[in-house]
Image 1: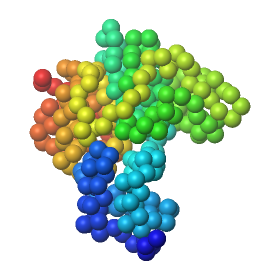
Image 2: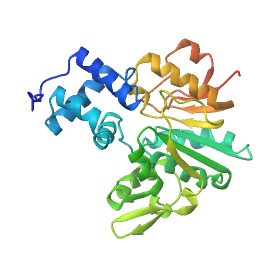
Image 3: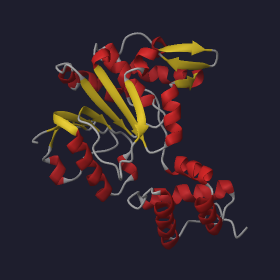
Image 4: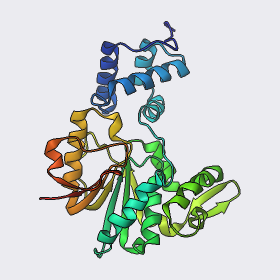
Length: 279
């Protein structure tokens, strides 16, 4: 093996560009508009953990599809939890749910859903507000492995207990465990919540509109993208929303483009919830 990347080393910009081009050519995933600092950190971490030189990393990316799945999991951030930022769900409950209740049927897109916790959180919220049977949630992600977890809807009991406080602060009735079947050291989401939820692969960077939605939730995703890519995805979301549909970005992200600010009305400045205006 060639010289291993040290803990304090970083990929050079030409090396990063070479890896981005290689992954796009071999695997069809384009990371060119991800923030460069985040990509460098994650690639350096992979090389350190796997004890790979830059040359070795290129070689294994070309020849080992199984490794590419590990690589993808590391590059695409999959940190999630149920009812993360409870104030976001409070805002949905007071400022979005009343509007959604006027529809005979509601379609929700949870983009970048990771292992499903946020999609199921939305399903629980809709159920508790009487919209469960007339709502359908599409959870999408670029990563096929985390989507397998999402479809199972089974989480460790330790995780569910850690989510209990989030649930409490949303103001929803009962306990989070009311929505799960406990099985020894694991908990399975109730089947009634799974039956109106579909998880599938969708690449925000390259894929197009696949439905029309009354609400789109995409939180903690934009922070990893450069401005140009953010605007491309905002355009995708705008085209995917029905007239007066809601775009929910959460408190860590916002619409910065003046062009898109004119296309959305601010519903919650704190939680970055917007309503589509115009057509």
